[in-house]
Image 1 (cartoon, helix red, strand yellow):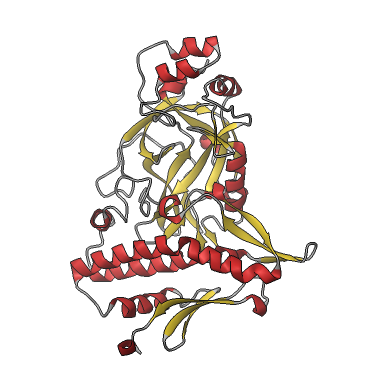
Image 2 (cartoon, rainbow, N blue to C red):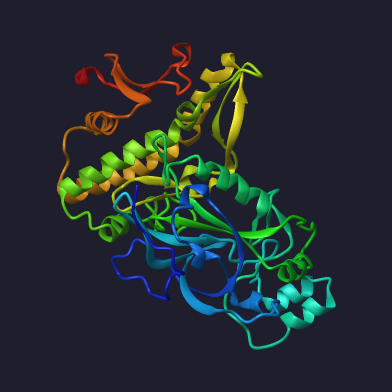
Length: 412
């Protein structure tokens, strides 16, 4: 599946104007680290990725010198992306994304989170002294404040990273039964002496588990709507220019890929469902505290990849409740999916002209996108077009239908 995967530490670079990676520059400092590698990537030589990348304000808390300094691009609140391609998967360039590189925003006040503020928060005299030394350094901070149950504020915690790694290891690199994900390649552990000092910086509750970073591969930095400066929802014209969608044919292929991957996102539970005979239940993957509008990115070919895998985990459902779970999962992300599709289709029509009515075109895109889908087919029921979802568990009683388009009288 990987036509190329170069196991090297990314070189310093600035994103080219047409790069799918865009955002403010963020300088990070490279240190050796102990890592756990995704078993799906064990065949690649990734020894040079036994690293962690830390922001300038954190470097004063380490006793060792850094190996190199590199220019990343800021992504979201606590992540950064190297704009140099790191691997090619299925013909698509992917870029190293590091999750857990610090935040520059105080979560409890309208002020920056910088070294002086961190020194005020620390209950350790040695840490306060280190934070007070030297000239101000740009970048964010990793703190010891417990955040989102399984992470330190500004960083990433081991429980969340291991959840993401488990999901990623179920995939064939980026493909989990049609559900596309940005794979976790490694989990990097921060040095123990740094952990102890970071743990002293907190507001109310102290994070007690290991501090780590997720080293993952992403095809772009373009989010659906939130956690990006220029997203499909906020500036779709920029997205068309960035991805060079300069013809109706290219825009059409982009839409088909978006819909194909989007429907897979809506039907993850059905695609991963298995029967658990010990409990007489069905298991499958579901979403927790992650959302399509901010936790997925769109590749230049239109394929949507889920990025923040820490909020995906296995759930167990009684047979009688499977239908409700399938229904709930579709509805949970349906609006975000349809909103993004509507922006893309409107921009295509603005640039290259309308092709048929809104609903008729969506039907045609759906039919093309789902033609080879193993789990979801389009069914024409006259007044409605429905998704016919087949369970991966193979029990026909668990199959499910969902009306996606209702036709007007003149469209019958």
